[in-house]
Image 1: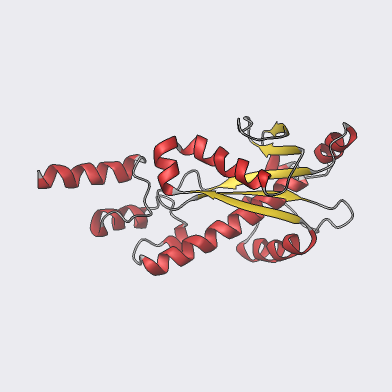
Image 2: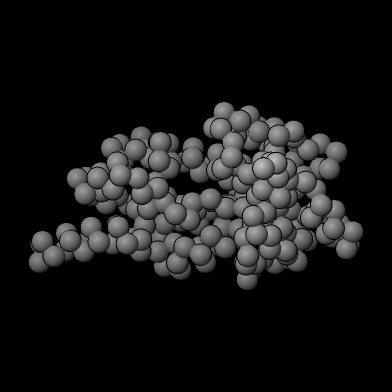
Length: 210
């Protein structure tokens, strides 16, 4: 099966309809038990598109890091987050949309190409939802890379503050090592209390002490 390579078709269509600042938007971090959800918006210059842009999930860490540097160099980039507290109070879908809205606002976009099947309700500009957009649309692919590298770096920093959970390797996702550490070390301030594995451990602790 031939590899599907993202292209500039969706950007060209939006520009052809009169948009001037067309950005690609993606987020990373819906599934982890800990850490923020991170979104990125990227406005690419059609004449300076880095070679090798792909969905961040199909790239090695080394390729993501190299492309991150190139994207920052040639494009307009806005990164934003939703905090653990916002995730717990709003729910993860709304929090991820909030991070997207913040990222888009940072670039004063007039049209946003959003990875997924829903447009954030507070987008503040026109938008197109593209299912599998990180594999189809160059601007979204670029956003997926920047968001992934940024959040991974945040989790490496947090791992130094809270050793033992393996965040430098698992980025907060519920690996066996992370789940074992939750049982043995307990819940940190960076854990999402609304997520079932974390909630269950807190509930167990309450049951034991009450």
